[in-house]
Length: 92
Image (cartoon, rainbow, N blue to C red; front, side):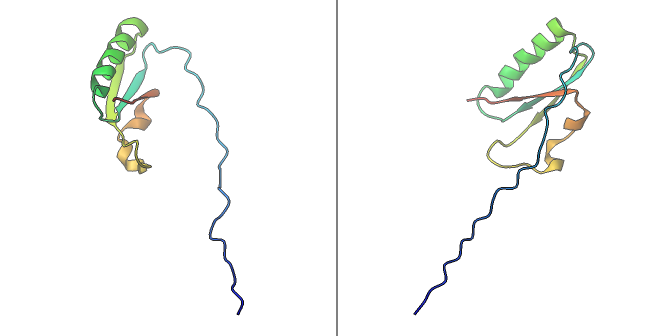
């Protein structure tokens, strides 16, 4: 009796990508502050926001949250596309 051995794995598909261009300045920008909702993440973002506004002239911030334990769907990110840059914070 002969057995056929099947390999269910596939090669990873990796799409080429590039980093976003660096902002020339933070002055007048809208910065997204996204929390992973763990202990102290929001407190850290509060401090980051204070520094961004006082020392770098950020015009506004947008708050959001994300789940670091899974890939989130596009619609779960809220108004992230309305931000000039985004900071993801990991609390613990």
